[in-house]
Image 1: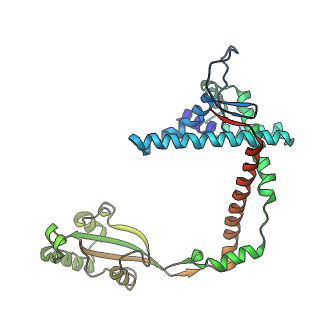
Image 2 (image 1 turned 180 degrees about the vertical axis):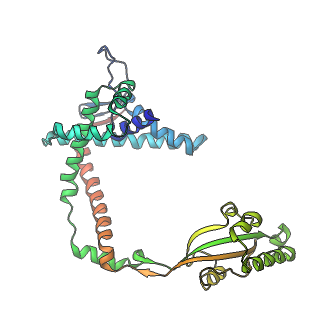
Length: 324
């Protein structure tokens, strides 16, 4: 578990193991890319890629797995190249990182382990030297500082832009009426579904269940026993449902009922449904004062991203980049 945590820390830092053995002899390693005069080795990419590989391997199989891994590796390599470029630019501009800042960040990583000794053992087990770990922390902090100066520090956002966004996107700051809902479904037989007919035996059973519920029977217990939809195991709990989410005839009924009410049996093509209505949340609309910080943050992130893309394009145009 701790080893996986360390790999995650390493990938976050884009920290890579040395391509030198313990005796100082250089190991043979394939070159993945060259950025100006710096080499990115395949082993660097592999170590950073390992936790990403584990996540993708859980979600995909077969040809899809191969495609996702290939695309993820290319994205990762591009990220490493961009980080190399930014750090080189930070060095060129004389961005300083103090020993105190490095130690503070190192301490933050140590705090994720039971004690400093365990952290040191994991570092040693991974084949890293502490000096290498600290160097990558230094690089990461320098990159962050340059981002703050070149990107965030040069983004301007006028109050009028924030207000204009609010006026043009009112739907983003409105909340439709919501209701906490439980549902129970009894499916029609296949012939009734295929021919669009009423399934009288199932309908009568649904009406009997609705009568029991209206007399005080436990909805969740009955749903677990009788319901034939995927939510039966959770007692039919559907969570918070927004007005307009359900098909029209069901939507109209559930939002017309008072809190704690049980619906009559409602028919669809597939079967018969009974609903229990819980707490209701009325429709609401944020004021500009309530929404302005959210808008400011959203617009700032958008402008910062656009500036970063433009700035990175310029760095790449001036750089020598070779992907092998």
